Every structure is written in structure tokens, then in C-alpha cells.
Length: 162
Image (cartoon, rainbow, N blue to C red; front, side):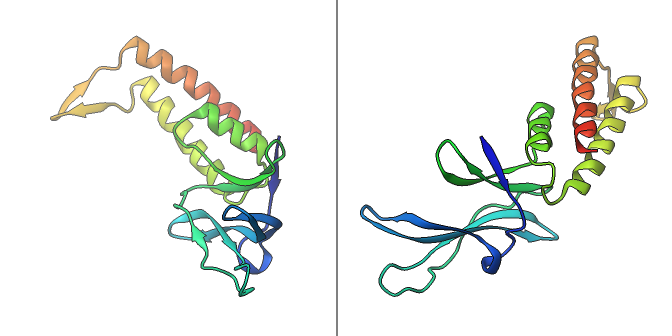
């Protein structure tokens, strides 16, 4: 089970773990947080305390996730992990908003989903279309069926965000 960890946004208010492995035999303190940068998004950061010096080592910082992210404690393994909103797969997006309803960036998620639904509806109706070398590509019935099904899931994601 994933237990969300909210409001850990920098080193000073990070989620602390007291017995974190450091090499093969030593265990030290570690801290975890989600760093937010307006122009880039969110990234997972962690830092360990040096076992002999007692000072904090240089933080390890992950790759940015643009829209929304949440840190969580995996109760099965005891590990601190993180997940980001998946804007390509509506099933994974639905899982994300159900598991992390108070994640930072949810206002952006709602706005993004509304735009996604509107765009899909315009493709389904034929108002929007794709072109290749200036020639309009016809939307097949299979494409329409897939988009209708996918759009229904995006609508469920939006409902879960409310």
C-alpha cells in the first residue's frame, strides 16, 4: 500500500528515515523531499548523513516531472518512493489521482485534463484533424473508437480530481 507523504518540499522539512543503509554494513540518517521549480516541475531528492563526519552529504536529485508528483511510503517494502502524474496513459493517470488526491500540482492536472478532453472531443467530431505534408489524414473508425474509449477514462480522471 502506498501512503502519501505531503508537504516535504525542501531539506528543512524533509521526511526523515533513521536507519538507512550506507554501504554494506553501516546505517545512517537519510532525508527525502520533493523539490518544486515553477518552470520545470517536481523532482525527488534525497540526502544521507556521513557516518563519521556527521554532516549531510550532497543531495541526490532526480529528473523533473512536469505536471504533478507525490512522495509516498511503500508499506510493503518500507521504502520512500515517488510517483508523477502520467499525462499519456489515462488508466495510470486515474490511479495517480485516486492514490494522491492532495498532491501538489493538482490544479494544473485538472486544467490539463479539461484541455485533453476538449481536444479529444474535437478530434472525434472531426473539427480537429491531422495533416501530413499539407494533406488531411482521415480519422479511421478504429481511431475514433479508441479515442472515445480513452476520453471516457479521462472524464473519470477529472471526476476523481473534483
